Image (cartoon, rainbow, N blue to C red):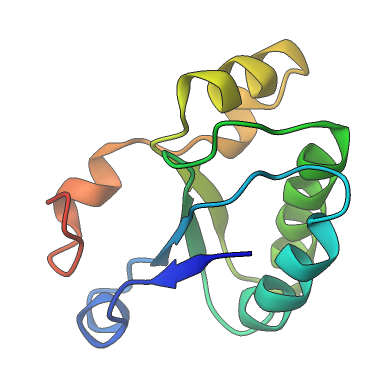
Length: 117
């Protein structure tokens, strides 16, 4: 599992979530490592996942996103998805999670440390 972390110092100073680029498939078998990497962080800070590099997602991947969303709610942090790939966006739309999980993509424009800004 490849998870890339953008620099955090300027993100935390602006109260924006830390943006994490996920570059692997979110499918059965990879969700445990995905959650092991991100659950401890979501309990301490707000996160936005850049899923532009994710070409495959299945029910296990969607369940992992829901678990992160619920953990953030319990911890009082925020969780969202930014720039999902076309396939990820379509899958989230089909299960009714697009309006809940996909954040305003302007968040990357406001994030000075993000390469896409």
